[in-house]
Amino acid sequence: MDKETQADELLIVNRELVYQNQDKGQSTAELLIANQELGFELIFQNSEKEKRAAELVIANIQLNFQELEREKRAAELVLANIELNFQNAEKGKRAAELIIANEELLFHISEKEKRAAELIIANKELLFQNEEKEKRAAELVIANEELIFQNREKEKRAAELIIANKELVFQNLEKEIRAAELVIANKELVFQNREKEKRAEAEAKKDEFFNMVSHELKTPLTNIKAINQLLEKTTDKTTKSYPFILKANHNIKRLERLIEDLLDVTKINSGNVGLLVTEFPFSDMLLQSISSVQQLSLKHRIILQNSTNILYKGDQFRLEQVMVNLLTNAIKYSPEADKVLVTAVTEPGYLVVCVQDFGIGIAKKDIDQLFDRFFRVNEIAMAYEGMGLGLYIASEIVKKHGGDFSIQSEPGKGSSFCFRLPLDFKKI
Ligand code: ADP
Image (cartoon, rainbow, N blue to C red; front, side, top):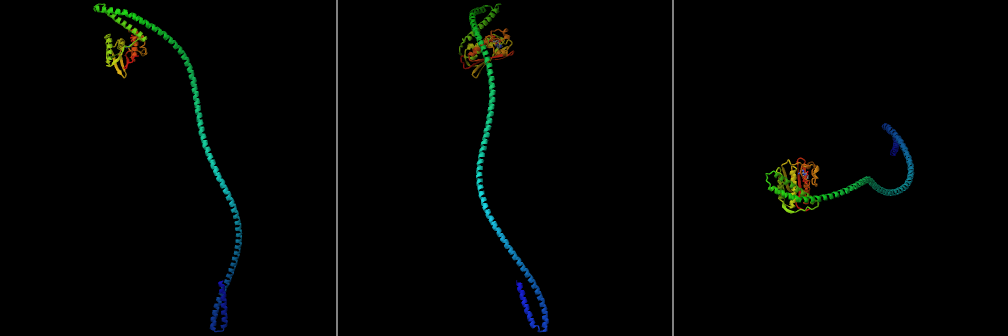
């Protein structure tokens, strides 16, 4: 716009100048030439200006064209804007619809959330119920296992009961067998009792007989003994008859002892052996019995190895009888030996006396029977004098004192007979 104004002004100026030139043209030649040059210059400048003006016109046209284009574009933009507004309105409508739909959705969602919350609660309830069920199931499993265990135990118990039952049946059978055996044994016992009674009767008769015979023998024997003692004293020891008198004396003593033993046995069997209890030095009794037996054998030495100084309460005469029997046997059954050992020691509560010999000894099978009446070891019975009554009487006397016997023996090596007497004597 400025350039157009400028061009217009230039045109006006030019015309003014042309006008001025026409008026002054006829002035000076120099001025003319100068004018001409100036005219050329001006023409040239004018043509340049015209060219420039044309360019400016073209530029102006272009600008107008551009302006038109711009207006067209603006119109198009307006149209586009209208279109957009329309679209926006549509969109607003759509947005409103969407908002409604959204609210609808939100409502559904809140409903769903509510439902979900309810479902969560219901789910928790179910979970709780499931847990309860699982707990219950676990309890049932345990209860089941318990039942299985109990069943097994019952089966085991049943098996055991079956076995026990079989055992009982077996035991019953055994009992029946045992009962039958007992019946038989009972019959046997009845029979044995009858036998024992018969034997006891026979024993009693025998004892009665022994008692009577012993007493009957005792009186004439006392007479014979007195006569023989008189003969022994009055007969010259160098006469031929003297050894016979000594032999008769020996046999009278044997008979005397035998009669005494028989009388003792009958007394023991009838329970008439009374003890004459006194307090006496025990060693006195030992020495007394040793010296009386020592006289019978010059071959054997009876050695008292240990003695005791205690005062003992008991029947001195009967205990001496025990010792004499043991010492006599020790000498009698050890013909090849030359000594017999005697010991007497006290143990807690007891007095223990032992007589040891180094003679023929006794077989194990016979030891238990040694204290039976009239028992003699078969193999040697004929070789040694005796009746098998001494140990029986001795054991009964020791028993009467509350004591007992023990024997150790080895055939061919010798025997040891020991008896124990309780120190606090109680009459049996
Ligand atoms: P007896 O000697 O009169 O036969 P005993 O009752 O004293 O009667 O002895 C019973 C039996 O015990 C004897 O016959 C003898 O067989 C055996 N006996 C006893 N003492 C001894 C002993 N010291 N050594 C070996 N045997 C003995």
